[in-house]
Amino acid sequence: MDMSPYRELFVSEANGHLAAFSELIVRLEDSPGDSEAIAELFRHAHSMKGMAATMGYEQIVAIAHLMENHLSRVRSGEWLLLPALTDLLLGGGDTLARLLAGIEAGNDACENTAGLVERLAAFDIATETVTPNPMAPPLDGDAPPPEAAAPAQQQFRQTDSFKTIRIKTETLDRLVNITGELITNRYRLSKCISAADGAECREPLQQLTSLLRNLRDEVFKARMLPFSFIADRFPRLVRDLARKQGKEVTFQLAGKDIELDRGILEEIAEPIVHILRNAVDHGLETADDRVSAGKPFGGAITLTVSRDKDHVEIVVADDGRGMDPERLKAKGVEKGLLSAEQAARMTSHEAYQLICTPGFSTAATVTDISGRGVGMDAVRSAVHALTGSLAIQSQCGQGSRFVIRLPITVSIIHALIVQSGPFEIAFPLNVVLRTLELKHSEISEESGTAVITLNNLPLPLRSLRQVLNLPPIPEKENQLLPVVVCDVGGTLLAFSADRISGQQEIFVRPLCSPLSQLRGVTGATVTGDGRVLFIVDAVALA
Image (tube, rainbow, N blue to C red; front, side):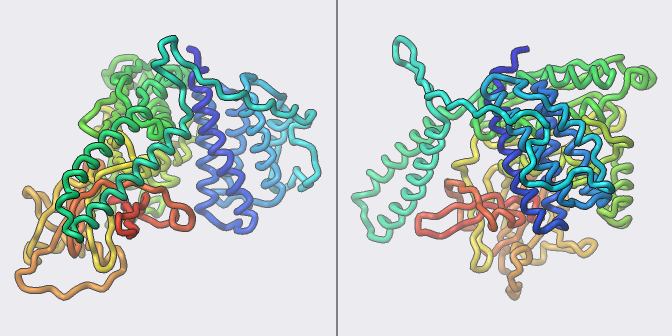
């Protein structure tokens, strides 16, 4: 299969991982005990290796795998991140950057990396075989790489009838930003007109609203790409992994013509690769085990994409061994992630979600495919960052299903605005199942947790005041309590608030450091009157 159409996307994603990799290593030199930074550093190396394996870039796979091995020892506490190791990892990152530059230029093997691979394989922290030397030549031991050729001038192609042109994605991103700003200012204009009782302006305002919606829809259409943009490489990925494992696997892909925003496609490609790799390595049994269990000799993996109004559902299913929730609970207790009492109260669905915990893995051995307990953690983080949901379904002996539900776009979304004390926050409407008003007498308590009943099912209730560290307000007789019920990956969660302000179309802005470190927050928006609203992650809040 010709993988060249995916080269640009791979280089873009890989360069992002490398940039973060270098930044984190420099940060760790000042704070070597930062476990979160070490875990994130490990994830970047793991992701780089997985993407390169998908594309068939063996030089990058070899280097990233060895770097990942060293970082695994640092993460487990076996090694310290001493300067010798830091220099070696930075040198490896520089070599990967040069390999990526060569791939971007069309030269997939731009330099000999045997020297670096040998140094990585032979490195032992006890002997510090690499001596820090800022003036040392590149670690591969070869001549310095030639200067990168000047980037070619962007060429715009158009048909003879001038109906189509190529547009830089940066231009489309700016159009989305401008559209979002226009929508924000429309709300501000609406409030001004209402305050001034400008009845004569209401009709033009309605026309402006309609035009802005049309503009939003057209801009999003320009950014839409079919799922096949990332999915056509998946059959090759599954085939290669199956051959490496000595397994017979049939892979089926349906719905690849469904379109999503390019930004979502870029972010979701890597999580799907993680799920497929786990399905081949962990999910499917060997041929002998399948025959003994009365199953067909070869396993089956399906990837199905479907659209439901303004959402897309991606389902990866296999007919493998499935997951045993009791075994997952026992592993969680063994790793100290939960107590025996908590494990006993866990539902099967909650037990399946344990595999998304950082460092959690039931694999007996670590391979270059999986088993390090990093893949599903990255999957859940990526899905939640896109304001999506991840549901895991499984049955012992029958297989597993991973259901990812995503909005068509995450730049401009519909949200439910909720107030708690002086704070206003926004719930993405795609996770809101319904709203309720309950009396305090309708709230009960089970095992120290507030619970409400919806359709004869008990739901845990969390107070947003408690989440936001606000003092509780005294209960008043017959006072109704506003409640937001969220459906996140098939799990229903309820949040109590002081007031529900209503729905609004908002322009999502990404958060920069230090706000990006806030737990339970995926972005922010600015209202028409200048207020900042945070967009929440319901799972993290719960």
